[in-house]
Amino acid sequence: NAGVTQTPKFQVLKTGQSMTLQCAQDMNHEYMSWYRQDPGMGLRLIHYSVGAGITDQGEVPNGYNVSRSTTEDFPLRLLSAAPSQTSVYFCASRAGPRNTEAFFGQGTRLTVV
Amino acid sequence: RKEVEQDPGPFNVPEGATVAFNCTYSNSASQSFFWYRQDCRKEPKLLMSVYSSGNEDGRFTAQLNRASQYISLLIRDSKLSDSATYLCVVNRNYGQNFVFGPGTRLSVLP
Image (cartoon, rainbow over all chains, first blue to last red; front, top):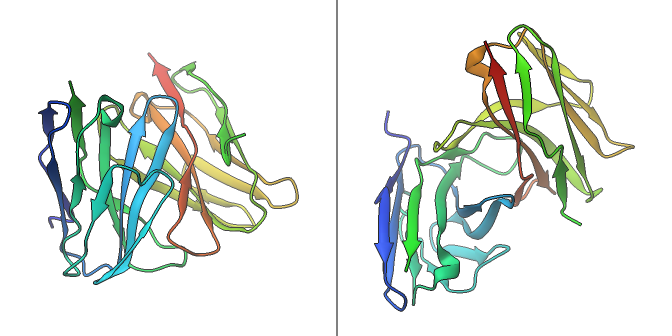
């Protein structure tokens, strides 16, 4: 069972470059989200989606875009990378809103130099 | 003040010890509560949900006090494999917003 698949696992970008982090899930989950994890900060919500065609901003959305054209895929785009975006990024999915388990991808370690 | 706060840790305990983690949350509208476990350089995984009546899963016991906005996790008879970071997670209003605490790191020593 694949679950939530994120690519790439590691990435180094130069300041100002753009890139897309890929996230796919095969569990037919409606809810998908992107988090970043920084030391001492916990996971912070960047953007989320409650279904295909529906996205919304989380706690720290600036500098990132998302789209949800299918139930399975939820890519995260960095528009113009900055050193402050150096972090570990996790994609997560869950079936619905009430008391359901969130399944995470393995994470993408991004360094912006 | 962070919405979800946890013991800063780290906790270093010998095998077989009992260890307790505390978590407080500030949003009284929070509806559901979880403990997640995160191994070093890995993704978080659900350890257990936390119910109002308290719940137990083997060596792990979770308690919720809604009046005090406080959640706890007790681990009995600690194993080396329990070494990880434990994340307190709160879900506001049954929505998308899972709010994560910063985590408490546990090292179980031989």
